[in-house]
Image (cartoon, rainbow, N blue to C red; front, side):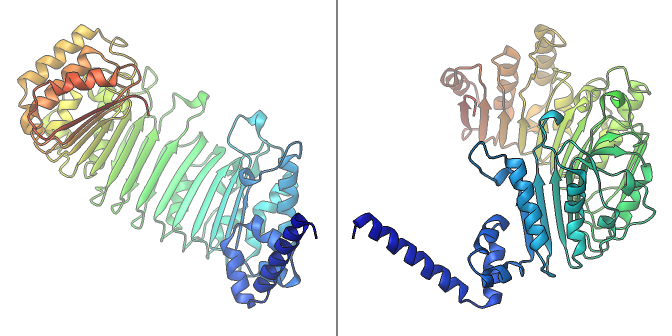
Length: 482
């Protein structure tokens, strides 16, 4: 016999024996095996034998991922995926479905999104609702046509996880009078639909007494005049309000957050007129991004200052604070009194991103004075994101910072600082001047890490190592772009 033919025959026999071995396992074991592999592989395996097909229908999970379907061109991915999903859903008859995941299309410009017939999309959205015991639903659908979310999604008592992302309309859901999600622990609502009801979010959260993780990202927030969230069970909260171009100048009238046990808080929006935030004693990390104010805000800069202070005071127990956008711009505009911002007793890690201001003589010192146990200071986008000449002269900024840092008891404010991270270093004199002050005053500094694409890492590292250092154990690392 030809050697290659003999080898192929032996491989085929071994494969058949393997299949026979698997098929001989009890139904319960087969079901467990097929549950551990992706739906695509399990569906292929179910073709082998009738027993495998029966075991497939005992699966408790279904996951469909459009991006994982690898096909040689010119086979159309979209048509193949739609046919595959429809075939599996039509044949699947397990009463034990607990988790349903569907990812179709990719987030991109609308013109490049795939087409999906409304009838078919509606069938896909409703399928998990035909199973009584479903506990987790994860839908990420980015297509040209919008689909209204089924109202039944928000009345499933068994649901523990609900993640919705993409071209999903929420108009009909907003109109619901009541919701019933007593066991829901995770809710991610990231829809491109239009948010039309102030009370929707308040009513939805109040119907979830077990909710721990809430993420809300609405692209067209038309009536978000009052944002009110109250939950004692909530541990993680992300509010990402993406104003449309016509609403860019709109801001919320009042933001109320009563979540005393919150551990992670992320807030992205224009500056609201007023904030009411219950003290969050368990807060670990707070990320705050305020859109550029410009001339749009309906209140004076003094009012904006007071609003921002109330938002920051509500986050003052965080051990990790991340500030971006107009936060720095507003704080840099006014003189802070000792009692206005309070003290960040728990703050260990401070990240500052400057976008519209470049002076560090005030805002940086303000936080250093009020963060007595700060250990890590980070500038994720550099000390001057747009260059020091963007808004004020380099000479003026250098003079102000030199005077402020030279006349301040900086050593006492940096007594716990262990690490400084500066990215996008550009090589300006003002950058080097600030680093000189840090090195000269941080007595227990362990690491200074600098990254930049416009510098010679070896030359800068040599320069920095020659500077006076209060900490004899400080390690200096300069690297190019990573």
